[in-house]
Image 1: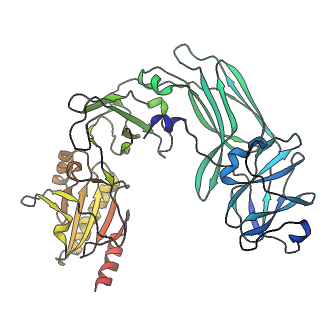
Image 2 (image 1 turned 135 degrees about the vertical axis):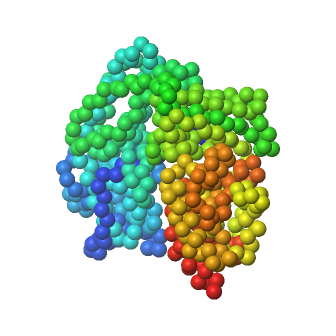
Image 3 (image 1 turned 120 degrees about the vertical axis):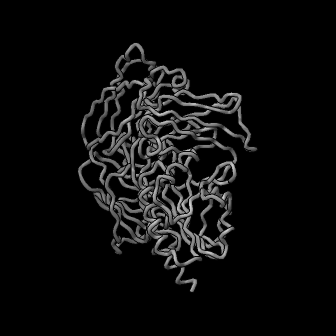
Length: 478
């Protein structure tokens, strides 16, 4: 992952404010308004203004070009005709997604006032721009120890399309060189994300210099005036007893230690979408043996270890208070493909039972194999493994069914100790050694898969109902 890209990019989206769709009145015809449309590709849509707003005209643009349509600069504006005081009609391409903007009398677009909507046959879209609002962002003088300027101020607006939350820069992107008040007028109502951050923040992070990073969501209501004071955060530089130490080795594509390379540790919020800038840690350069170490890592957070485009995800369950964990980074590994109806990749497994040693999934050809990927640092995995042990006992008389608990732990010794202290005697226990496999599991654990007697993957998923799925597969096999 590129930290600079992660830090500076804001995803493109459009404002969600009030949109409804319903069949349009059949009394409106394209011939009456000189619209010439192909009925196989296009439809005639109507747009109804709801609520009080400034005098203006709707602007219909494709959702993907909404960012360019701001302030009438660029972007396609679809032809429309007004048929009464609050209603317009116009042609759209069937199946394409659009948004509605509102142009006031001075020809400036003060916001998108509909959720993204997909053009269907004869639809009517209601939209409500509301009255324009104002936001003032007060940039005060920073404390002496904080590097603030030059900085960037961005004010994107949120929408939810097809269940996904995304953001669109609404044309507010200003450089800050000194304390001042940034005033934004003519805003449509909605949820905005306020962001202000110092330029070259990555270099400041490495040097442990506190800097400006202010990010929060703001709800703007129709016709209101809003004022917000800048927030100057402090970077956590203290090492406490409860902090976590992360050690590991970086291996190149030939699985040899990779010296003098920069490894990054990036902390995230619970949703893994935004880096936690105040918890960033200095980059670490690998020693002649490819080893790296991060000390003073805040416990109970999510994080990624990164070398260029290779990342290892560390969930908060693994970063428990006062622990030291070993995590290696291996270049050249691919994500384990889980394709139903296709042969399962032949993973190399280090089995714990004496005499079993190293094996592969192909060793179990001719048997139905249930594999549960888990990790000792996950409480939900431990609960699931106990359930798997009970299930394996229920099927213990059927010698053609195998239950394997396959650990993705970073440290083999930790996995072995956990198994020794457990009562999971009905299961085969294995460890997925990254040095012996070209694939890495990129799924939330516990993740379970079931392979039939021919080695074909039949089902997979997080927190899978294994008993039900297994019985289905066995029934089809009979």
